[in-house]
Image (cartoon, rainbow, N blue to C red; front, side, top):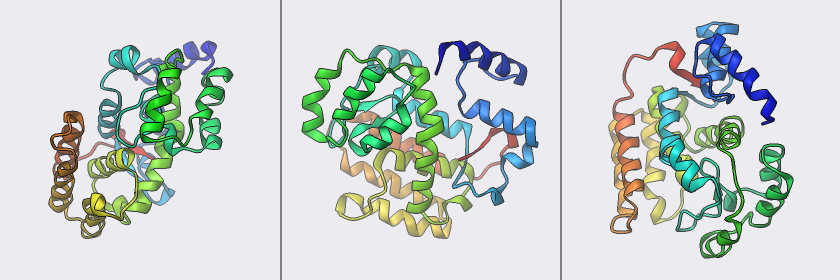
Length: 261
């Protein structure tokens, strides 16, 4: 985002009565929709969106991806390799191993410098040990948090919302916090359903169709079998938190906390 636009965005945000962070993210877009169309339009199920989630759910997703703004600036502003079969990862969980060069260029052009972008395009598609071996060569690159947030909210989230809706038919009929939890799950694990490692991912499809929240939560927690004793406590906690969000999804929702994706 051009630096001269940030003060203008902050002025708009102050007028809307929201956090003046200078980022056109979920909070800003929701406030604008509410101001322009009224709260009822912000959650219109006939509008054709893939999901209706909560701001709380999206903040939960971001927290599990970057922990905090301070942590991001200290440890994640340069490309990293999270481990396993991940690719080189930038921004808010943006995995270059699972995005094509064309997609990366479309998402990040104008958000980061051209030279930085060209270096990232070279590692698109690399996963696992291949990605781990090259990430050390990218340590001098810097991905500003405001650019990461813009790409996350404007490009990545809508794409993953559609992926979640395709992976779990009927998910849009669940309570918004449950939709957010499944969005988090798909964002972290993708949509593949075949194989023993994906047993619980596949089983959730039937429970979504039946709107069985306890069964969905149980399957999410059961996935922890895959990472036990692997030194990944953050991932185990993420599954527990997603399951807890599903179980608590049957509650009253305010119009201004809901977000269309």
